[in-house]
Amino acid sequence: MTGDPSPAPVQGPIPARAGIGLRSQHHEAILETASPPAWLEVHTENYFHAGGPAVRALERARSRHPLSLHGVGLGLGSADPIDRGHLERVRDAVQRFEPGLVSEHACWGHVGGEHFNDLLPLPYTEEAVEHLAARVREVQDFLGRQILVENLSAYVSFASSQLSEGEFLAAVVERSGCGLLLDVNNAYVNASNLGLDLDAFFAALPRRAIQEIHLAGHSRRWAGARELLIDDHGSTVCDDVWVLYEDALRRFGPVPTLIEWDNEVPPLETLLAEAARADQRLERHLATAA
Amino acid sequence: MPRPRDPAPDLKTLQAAFGRSVRTAIANGTDLQLLAGGADAACFGAGIDVYRNNAWQFFLTALERTYPVTQRRVGVDYFRQLARDYRVQHPSQHGDLHWIGEAFPPWLADRMAGTGYEWLADLARLEWACATAIAAAQRDPVGLESLSRFDPDVLPCLALVLQPSLQLVASPFPIWSVWQANQREDAAAPVDLAAGAEHCAVACIADQVAVYRLEAADHRLLQHLCAGMSLSDATAAAASDAETLGRLLERLLRWAFGEGLVVQVVKASPA
Image 1 (tube, chains in turn orange, purple):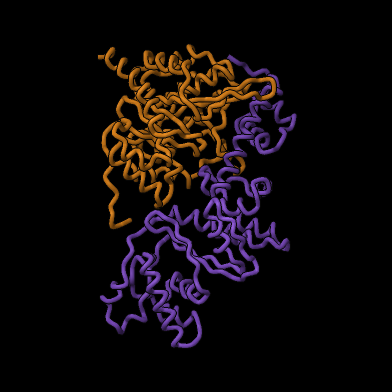
Image 2 (cartoon, chains in turn brown, cyan):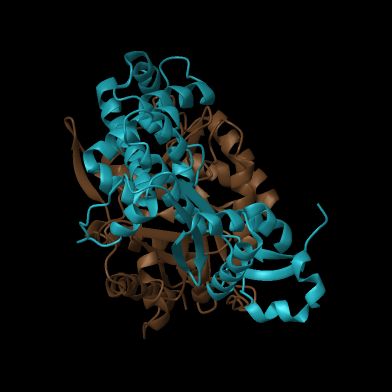
């Protein structure tokens, strides 16, 4: 409320430590826990509102924790024009919460005025590189800051692709000046679903562009004769993804790492335990780097 | 690395075909062939199924969260059918799921016209008011004593600035009673749908949504005050004899100030 001014946000960059996604179930617990995470991330769209309990809870949490805003609804790669109203609300959220990082996805999401509210895959073509890079530049110019673009988990790949996923992302970085948010679980899912060559994928990514890593759980589902890994963010990080995360740290160095958990959200302690596992690995790599 | 075999569709064409495939229950063969580009169309279709299911589940879940009482009254299966039909006419227009249910109450009113279930649309209007109230800005309320800083002569010319979240919903059906009866999991008290009209006010106060049942005259007066009318004009427009009006205004002011609904008292702008 106006007579109860919002507490000032924590300033400074997000540390190369483990953070967690803040979900509404934990709005109170996050303020009370004795071992809070190093930073928090939220879905930008959940805090578009003018007020209400969610916004006030984030303002309180923001006064204690560095924050990253992670967008899921802009549909950067949509061939249709960008939704300016949505972009304005992203800008308002950025101005309100002063996040250390702002990110979105290398995807599209709307066509012909219909939004699918999902992260839909792009073909890895020259046209798509140019289009996505132009959109990222448009967003960065509008927000007045760099954004990170996250690699997608996908269930189809396009035969029309001319580039590998890593080459595609590297070209977008080069032409837009954006950073990368490397989702290690997404890469793992794509390796299983689409045959992504993980070594070649990591090798193609520009090292200095990677400013954040995501870790999450996935599930398995049969789709016809295909077994697909579904990136549902509803379980612990699997052993293979931890191994891949170690590989990413060796290649790209320690960067802020998020435990994402959006479905079947467990008690805060479970998220913090996952974050501690990431922190152990980050500390090892920080010590090595020192 | 995959290489194109046929001329590749441009991004706009590809996304249009992908969108049609996700929107419809079964993707058409031409779109699948275009998207798969010479690769195994059946395999591609299995992947499309995941996106189709995601888009539907996100839509349904958003609607269920916005309209829990409506869903409870019609049952999970029928609500799901309503959601499917609603989505055909009102696909998501925003990248923000919050707005998916915006057109649901008027759509439901059309759907239920002449069925004897018209009250469902009014119940949905009440739930949409709750969904928007909780997202509205909240301002610090002022107390009844804020009137005392004005000269008594100007009191009739004063207007109230009310909480931005405040919304009024009226129905010829007892929608407040239905809503109230469904706030508890174990509540099974039947509501007499022939009990007549109910008038409601919805607001978010101290992070909690409050749904009030008002007398018809209070509701009318509050409507005029929400429109920015002065106390005297609003009262004159609201009802009948002067003595009743005085009591009505006093009762409404005590309630509105007491509930924290008034955020400022100002001199009314000339009409």
